[in-house]
Image: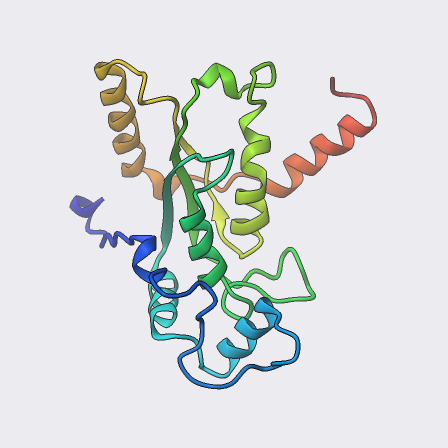
Length: 210
């Protein structure tokens, strides 16, 4: 991507999580010291410009980004806690989304995002018949519940199944495939996180799908 003129920024989540998780304010007092509500306090801190400097810097990076790639190992059928912590602290109300409009009120529009991750199990394990179930169900909370909710255009995930157990040549092919995809990733269309899944749920309820 650098060869195509794009500026790449690698972010390590733990660099902004060295402080106490609930430390989100650099100045100011609690909005409601009698009853702590993290979401409310984060929203008020954002509105009043009281978020800590590390979070303001993360907001600047996300604002400038055209494509955000979340790279991680699938852990307990989700993202690792440190990445979830980044999202909890950075994707606050006012910056990433608004309430009570709900879905469709995401503020990070005109930006692409995708999940790129490795798994411990092979591809067959993450199918409808596999022991881990359809991978799309695993990804639903992350792709729809977080990324699309915040306004991102969600691209298809990049999944490397069980690289730990794959032969060397197969691991090389995983990297080659990813590298090839990145060259044309700007041409990709977002996946229909909402409609496709809602349609499937409705059809399942009607008994049309097994």
